[in-house]
Length: 598
Image (cartoon, rainbow, N blue to C red; front, side, top):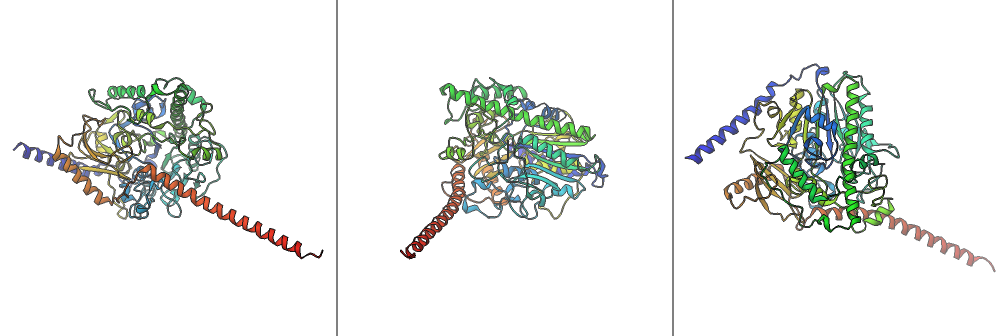
């Protein structure tokens, strides 16, 4: 009888949530609101930032401008993205699941068996509308500056996906000090302005360049003449980790105690800030991680400096955001601008330097990894898996994986329509951002667009609802085999090799956000239900199977080497042609000499 009553109560709660979500749009500003009254929107994406990287979330770096936005708006503390950049950005810009949006994974780790399968074209699928396209239909001017990484060629760049002006990096990353590649997968740093190859300065710092260009785009129209939407996608804090020396130097000695201490300190601050229960445990560093006290003094020095540069990179980015805010204030538009600040996934664990053959590539491309000048021009710096594990506290693991450290990231909404000082602890997802913004500005539905998977977060921000999803409503995530499904406070997660083992586990995130206690054996019925929910999700969105033995790391190397081999083959063919031409010329010369009379 009690079980039946509990099921009835859950059904009633789910029905109530559905009614709240269905009725919420009726309370928004009408779509025919005068354009000059609608708020501007600035959507800021920080690349590879951990949940606690911003000061407002307990981070070490000074981020006063982001913190100001957090204080004046809503902080979402149980927000989840995907474990990789392109799928996250596709969902953030559309509100549509990454597979349905056409960007199931990233090209760098795509196996040949998935290439061009539905959902794996790695650019927006037909009928998928970006928020830029939706807002452009409402009279918004749409701007984009920064990392794109959402497809190449005709129809794939920002100018054909709703953006009026754009300066887009069509790659996973690039050097921050100039237009050049950061890894062997790329020949160049492919920047495009309004769909055409961009003429970039020879020298710049990426965060400053992006904000300067965006300010220029904004200034092309008089203040208040029409609302604008701006998508600002920083390279910070993606590899290469680089920052002006004056910023990095502000953190001298801050990380000398090592990665174990940083993880412990972040966990303590997470408890104090309410990001995890006071009695909740966290996992230690990964088993394959190196204990800090076993490093040599030279190793400690360069790794500690890497984190100083990382913190400096965050602060330099925040300073650029501050300049943008000051510019909007000078135009009289700051108070009428809605800000979104988030990260695409958790911290980056990769070590690009100590990979076989990388020393040759670095030498050919004038990169170095030395303590002197670390993070400055010509330096290819990174933080590695141990620092990434420390930064991801209180979560487990990091980027690439659907454990909490890889997908639980910060989200801040601040500006018109968002109550100041709001903390939202109920689950939220990357697909919820666009529906929220659409509701806040009163944009019309677009019947020709692929339906969105997310929901508006406005009811939980205003207190009209306690949660966006009912206790029995599942939400799934999958990228390259790494997968998770959320239902209420419970989550099943599968992390693939080589870091994971490909097995599903069950956790109660309300009590155990560190994912330390697997409940699969203790709650088999719930475990089976969530597995069934995930199977339904996988079928609905079109997840494709992976080849036997697949790992993201090995596929990345295969794809990078494939591109390099193509270049080598072309070079060899050219060289062979030159050699053949030289031989032919030599033979011809010898024959002519022999024919001469004695």
